[in-house]
Amino acid sequence: FLTDIAAGKYMLENGGGSIINTASMSAHIVNVPQPQCAYNASKAGVNPAYKITCYRMGKNVAIRVNSISPGYIGTELTLNSPTLIPLIEKWNEMAPMGRMGKPEELEAICVYLAGDASSFTTGSDIVVDGAFTCF
Image 1: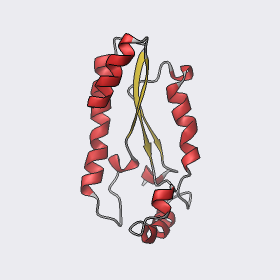
Image 2 (image 1 turned 120 degrees about the vertical axis):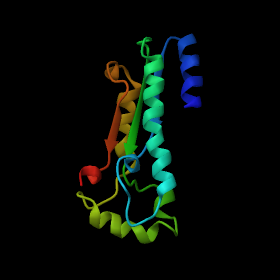
Image 3 (image 1 turned 180 degrees about the horizontal axis):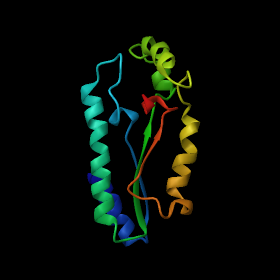
């Protein structure tokens, strides 16, 4: 939230911009089998925070504030974490697409939100999770 405010002030002085926050599908569901109440609560907190920022910046149409909520993404950190490796098979079994996402599958969303094509997109959370939150 504080970073959004600081970025917004800079953008007001420099003609606008796009703020893209990172939430998580964990803001929308209860993850299993791992217990991660604090993580889910912190990611769920991103959504009202960016909406408050969006509201505060809303009169200035040159500043847009959105978030993306990725699902399980196969990053180097995830794929090499001794804590997470045992969970990957379970996540893939539970996932409608049967796999984790790839980092590059988030790129187009970020390009869209950062660019002019999203000039009417603000206050939105885009969930990119391979339908994991559908159940």
